[in-house]
Length: 454
Image (tube, rainbow, N blue to C red; front, side, top):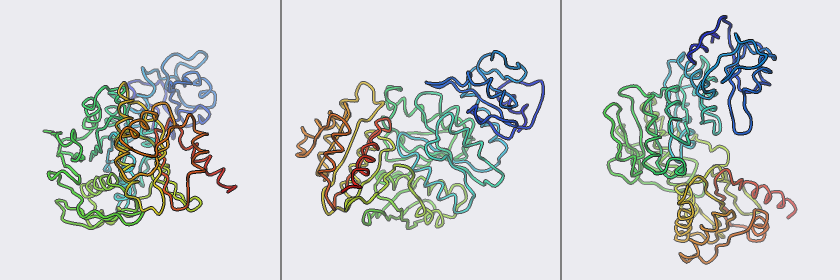
């Protein structure tokens, strides 16, 4: 891009022009040919590092205030650095006339993104967000990775409040939109599921008239969504009104699920290398997205088998004859119930053990939601519940009141890890689930480290 283009994207101008090969938010990466965008974070204010970025050779700095000692001609002042970064990403995305899939939802959006990437990659060289780069910084940085080689893109968009997805979708401009679910994640910020739906539906604002919108029809709020401007298509397993449905679902062992996809494009057999009803739903969204973006239906169904999980999403690790399932990427009541159902159906020669910590950002009803999840767990074929964290005491209380015989709350992670070392036996399946902020993976790492001496 040219420096003048970048300035124009944020509603400003410059007195000189220069070619720009990279946009950076880390002043240490600033050099000739780069533009530094200052981001205010909770711990650090990028504006404090703008002078150093310019000294390191950056062509210009996008900042929120005047920078003492810096050449004013090289400073582009904006109201908000994050929004400026998104607008620059959107300007760069505008250079590429390729199909984009935009994905959001309370749970399942990262898995859905990975499934969509697998399907689109059957025909197109496809860009995707890496890891959880789905926020106001990660999305524009993903867009900056577009090259002339790319033929399609799938962009996951997350949010914590109103307006965030609106900004992202106006930059991404999805050709196809997907909303996976409306749960209670971020209810502390938004107050109700209806408000969460409203925030997720901001995705539509960046989509062109007539574009397809895929919604999970098994979700009560999404099933009721209508649009005069877009083509709504429901997918699911339970709702008979869904245009794309999974039937004849069968779990095979501990690592695969087969089903038949019934859709407007006919019936197609499919298999995914993961278990759990929620993952079948995510695969359906990917199948529909692929078909709508020009993938042959049979090829789209076949491509689902090439899905690979990322990070700590149902990652299965053999450990001294037992199986550890690392599923600590994130947690909400919906995803915890899905994990409990999947664990209950997991082939097992020993005990099924569910290891939990707190679910965050649930607001004033957090304790009640934890107790409800505990009662739900007690009704599943799960032999042992172990938990730590202040809110997780409510989960254990709910399970205990519902009649679960073996459930225990621990005062800290170290005591729970020690108890796990003595509780796990060959043939057991041990499933870890918690919000990312609880760092439950530290218990897993302790288990692995101490297990080396067993």
